[in-house]
Length: 273
Image (cartoon, rainbow, N blue to C red; front, side):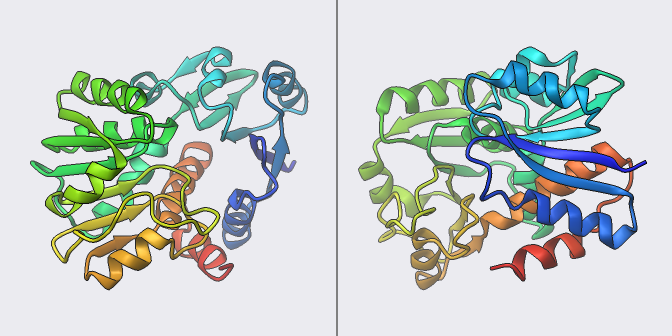
């Protein structure tokens, strides 16, 4: 019997997850299918019920449901509890178990490049849902300091407090201040959606240099303005699609208890740009 998996969110039509997972099933000859399922804001309870009715085997959760979905879980992983959000759910005979693959998915390309995090300083742009997972990842790997730069200072301070609670030295600055001092940090991470519509980089890149590692979690376009400008300044760059792949591979492994066919998943993604 075909097993069905899905990604839920709104909007959902732009999601690359169905292509990635279906490519994995094809590569391994698995009798599974993966669909995008739109659940509008405010309709999550009914949406989850209907997924249970069709006996969905598992699903990914994206904007705007990552936090609210926590209420409908029967069990949650340690990462879910720390981050306060869920992005991967397995359905075990009606028992919903939640995981968060954002943190390890984010760390995956850093580890693949053997870049040490221990003792490093991080400039994190953005204070939304992804920011918490990224901070949790840096804390787990022993980063020393995180500076949060955000459009609204209060939100930045709130995320900086979250970082402090995980044992990191932290502070919050404006986007302008971040642009002035960006070159001093080992890691510069964009955790906002700025760049998705080809907008200019969220911070000035004039101080970015060859000592920086610039990581933009926006995966389309692949070369955001932040990435393009940072490359011109000889910084090392990490692309958003790599985090997406890392997350997808981890979700695959949770659901299927088998190693994800990373190259087949990557091919559909990079070939798709």
